[in-house]
Image: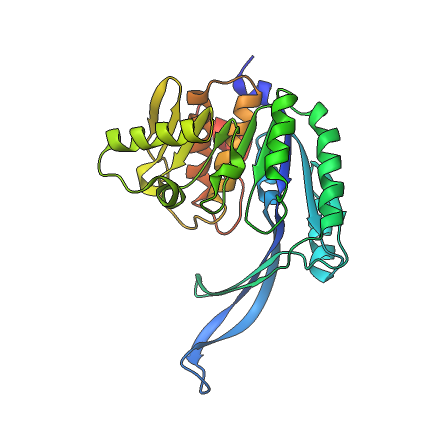
Length: 311
């Protein structure tokens, strides 16, 4: 069976901070008389699924069976997000918190450039998070791989317990980390920091050997099976029990890197769930990321795009 066919049987559970990515596009022709800032005449707007929702979209676009578990508010942004999620092919368990403002990132775009980003967010309440943890424990039984997509917005307050439950159920658990407190992710199968995030935890390095040593120390410290560091134009590097494996970047033209980390962890997860090795999973993730960064905003790499290169 080909990897593409095996991915269709893969069952992925995505948990984390789902958000609404809102774009306002417009023309810029003058500077405001009130302040030295451009005046944007908004001509159209677009809403997209962001955060953990974008991870789920990427996994589903590659053909996997996906379930998304998250929290949203009862506000207008929450309604818009639910409408977008209902149009997707994956299963959604979205817990409502009336006191919670749905996480929204509003980007103002002029002349094909992002001029401003405005964030709207609050922390979800204890009760809804407790209910989500209970739902997570139930959903674990019907998945092959778990992805925890941490954007630091409070949706993964119980991340340590979630990892413990996944380990007890013998389910591989992949984490896209946020911040430098990686003790919360102790026991995860794999974490996928970018270059900057890894440097904040491990310190800087000058050579590949020094990077490998630091990766080994981090793996040992947090009891990780593997560590995947995305390194922008330098590609990505997987560090596991067999050593270091590097994949050079495949991007032909970089248009927008937002959401690329979502693509990487989603592609790795579906490959792992399909029975691929870590090295094979990194190759798929690298290929998918190279496609996504050539697109605008939060986007996905489809199975046809990814596997079409092999045809």
